[in-house]
Image 1 (cartoon, helix red, strand yellow):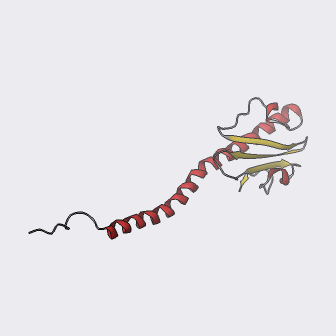
Image 2 (cartoon, rainbow, N blue to C red):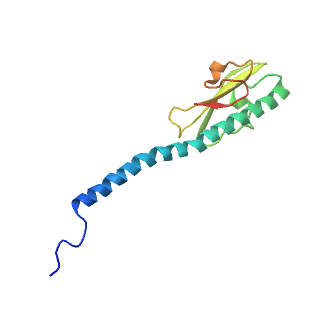
Length: 131
């Protein structure tokens, strides 16, 4: 006669499987979140570099830097990216950018006499830096 308990899994075996899946999930979810942030940061970085190019074109035509994005109708930011020109003079400018998919992260760039404090977290002119 066969044992009636020979089919299926015990409660202990099922609990061990659930615990192992939980441990794997706690490892995988943060890595997945970081991987998802990379393209968002790349989009903001690209848009700020494009802004720098547009600012130089604007300077060659207007002899000063654009104080607002509306001054450069040919400039377009990527979807869900918000770019802000925080400072613009005849000799420099500073801007920041964020993405709606990034919680609290910001990228910045400044050039010329623009202030690094208006482009936080930028640390050197002409270089996009993100936190």
